[in-house]
Image (tube, rainbow, N blue to C red; front, side, top):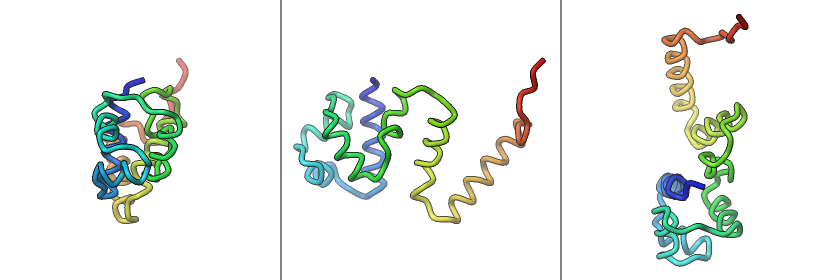
Length: 116
């Protein structure tokens, strides 16, 4: 388990919601110092605390734990979904256009690897 990356994701989501550490700590029933230590990756957290954080941040557990989960297609698609879900429609369209441009540049749009 990479607690540092878990803490970074929690911090990113907290900032996305314009919450202070103290506010998030209060909302989830933990101390400010414990919240700070979680975000720095210095402390582990209980399943109960993780669930309260996930609920307050409005994300899924597998998004926060994605570094610990296997990199399957489903996991990667879920990470994409978590990133764009909270964005307005115009930004979602912009992100889609950028992604298409990247794959076009790489020559991978609509192509699957063919067996040799």
